[in-house]
Every structure is written in structure tokens, then in C-alpha cells.
Amino acid sequence: RKEVEQDPGPFNVPEGATVAFNCTYSNSASQSFFWYRQDCRKEPKLLMSVYSSGNEDGRFTAQLNRASQYISLLIRDSKLSDSATYLCVVNMNNQGGKLIFGQGTELSVKP
Amino acid sequence: DGGITQSPKYLFRKEGQNVTLSCEQNLNHDAMYWYRQDPGQGLRLIYYSQIVNDFQKGDIAEGYSVSREKKESFPLTVTSAQKNPTAFYLCASSYAGTAIREQYFGPGTRLTVT
Image (cartoon, rainbow over all chains, first blue to last red; front, side, top):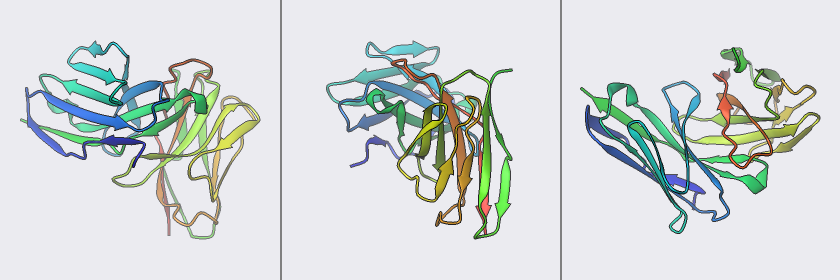
């Protein structure tokens, strides 16, 4: 089993749609969680950290369920510019800040 | 402007040659990391360093070497022993010693070995 698993995608949605990405992680010792965004042939960029109580940043909402070892990202009112690959990332702080990356879920927002 | 720079953006080498990829940061981060990404795959950790003059192997260190002589710099050498060196190489950095350690990435180097 992979340490971090994501919906494989691709997700093709119309502008204005709401889309949700799911991610599960295998190591219960994981302590920090992130969503990164990666545009085609570019480096990953931090989208948001994920906090235990859930957090929101504009159209983006992240949720964490430690009991189920599950992380989600909700994008409301999708824009064309949201088209990218979204990476679920888990940090096991007891391993020197090592990040474990999911393989990513591709999102394509169409007009 | 603070950030992470990697050079060059594209690199072409013949099989059997060693090649060194540059990574520099001026974010005053203690920790630096090297990843490789292959098409359609997630990032895999090659080496990381939490402090100057110290570094640890990641998941796929074979065929690679690093040095950390300065806080700002963490060069990666891809040796001829690396069986499949063609990939997108990404350098990242972060603060060490905090619970939440977001990593910030440089623009990457695309290495092609023929």
C-alpha cells in the first residue's frame, strides 16, 4: 500500500463547478498535512496547510480526519486557472521533516 | 527577492558523465532537499540536509551524491552509477525545528541523458 494515495483523476469539470479531492495516508504517526498545486512542467507550490479543525482559504477548503487517516480538498466555483495537478502531502515530523507526496490528481476546468 | 534558484533549467549529458545540479536559497532555511519526479509520478526524495555539513539519504539515493558546505547551497551530483538519470529534479528548502515544515521549491532542472 502506498503511504499517500489520491484519486487518480483526471477530473474534468465546467467552470463554476465544485470539485472535491480525497487523499488517504497510511502512517498514523503523520503530523502535518498539506495540499500543493503543480502546473504542467513547473515546480509544486504550497496551496495550503491542513489543520485538525479544518481550514478555508477563499474558494478552497481543506479537511483532516485523523481517525480515518483521510484528507480532503474542496474547490468551489472552479476557475479555468485552477487547472493543475493537486498533490496531497504528509509530513512525518519524527523523520527530519520528510515529506511524502501522493502521485497527484489532475484537474481540468473547461469553459 | 527571497527564493530558491536552480540552474540550469535544462541540461543534456551523455551517458557515463557525472553532472552537478545547482541549488541555492536565500530564505535562511536550515533544511534543504532534493527530489526527482518522473512523468506521471509523485516526487521521490533523493537526499536531505537539516544542517550544514550533515545530510541523510532519502528513498532513492543510489547513484547520487550531495554536499552541504554552506547553508545557502545544496548541490546534487548525478553520477554515472545512476541507471535512469533522465528526470525532473527539484530542490526544496524549509525551516527545521518547527512542527509544521512547509517546503518551498525551486523551479527545477530537467536532465536528459542520452
